[in-house]
Image (cartoon, rainbow, N blue to C red; front, side):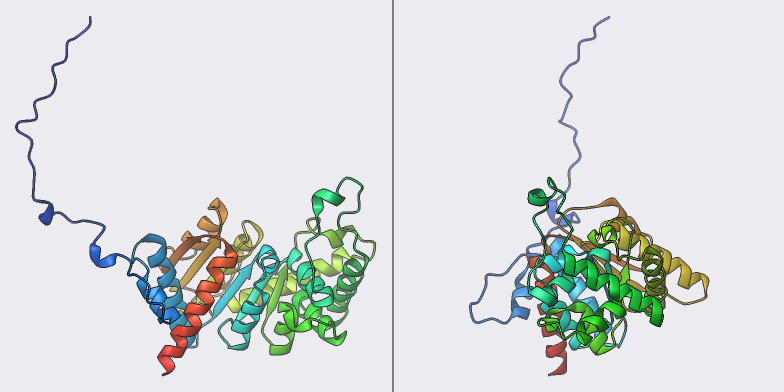
Length: 319
């Protein structure tokens, strides 16, 4: 049977003063107008101390502190990071001793090599997939297949072998190569291959056994670096699947072996939110023993902001 409802009586509503309430937003946290004569550190200080801007400053502060305390800072990166022009910034951070180790997926060696050889990379897939020419660049397949065999013959990691090969062949733009920088500076650059995902896997000279062995040596090197993360920072930039999985396995491995890989900061950076990096980078490894941050934005904007902030933060502390 239908029931008639009268409007509820509001006359006895209990209220309180807004000044007594705990609020999540304060005018003290608001942005400050920009002074055209300011330094980059002043720009960071002018940002609102709220949400993403607050996280950005926290990440920069964590990296500065890690560097000052001589702790490990690991950069894991998808190949897109190379394609948006960040090699010079990453190499600069390596040369300054800020980045302790770099990890990349199999596509990373392709774009890094092509840039070192020709100054160009990233083919137009839509234009070449129809006639079957996508991924068939001869020099890329041949050079990297030989570097993989070098890794196998000399028991090297894949990243080290490619970096050494770029230097040994004196490629014209080797100074723009992250892999060559790693070999030159003796900084680990590890490569984590998923067989069948990269264009060189289609080429007749590709040796999957050799690539697997070299990539596994790199995983073990990656785990050795991860074992030193206490008090350090781990950044996952633009890898949605492979490197978050590698990181999770490395962390459980080193903890199983008795290493105290805790109390570190993890950072995931991408232009959209993904389940796996949030779970395997930001949340699980730091559960109860660290901090995790997720920064959403374009790599070509966000990473330069962090790099500049860290460099200025270190410089300010030294003066």
